[in-house]
Length: 259
Image (tube, rainbow, N blue to C red):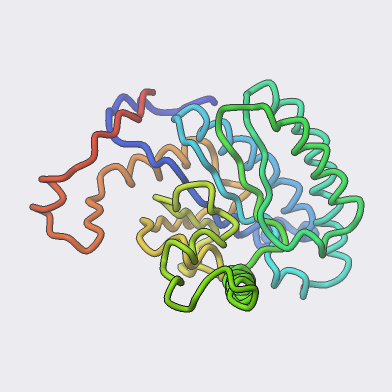
């Protein structure tokens, strides 16, 4: 990653960063292009952010690539988006493997086209032995879908006699989420100038720090990602406690920014 600044701080790096990649269509419209051109340009931003996250030592990066609500967009845009996913995966997977980046997917992928699912399967298989940064693509995903799915699964478990109503607690609910195998996001970044969550990881971001960038996603660079992480490291996360309590029980986190 080419950096324009000197990031020589030493502070805690978030283990998990989630990103709402917003503004592709508006970026294209502002330049007189078709909306799909913005999605194509956004692929480069994904590459830069993956490189930056990997370089900082982030363990998990979850990218909101295609929401359940995106199915309501014009059919030609949806078709172009799904085709772009296929093309991008085929082009980027060799670099992911070389950089030891593992790919994962969360969402209702049964709704995707056969072509998209097959491309995803090939990329997941190719990166399955990578041990570095894990990139989670949220495809055909919404948090309400995920929570509804979790409730349905627990209801089925209760009907089968595997659990009782009193067994349902936060840990059980969390175990039914698509992110059950990873820590909750420490930091949520949204580009595009809007300040909302848009049905993304609502259960998981209960205590996440939020960072809103005015830049459209195709304009967002690796340096912008580093800047968001650096701002995050300067915040105090209290989790309902007082500052004094946080200072007294601060975790020993050796994951630091080394730039």
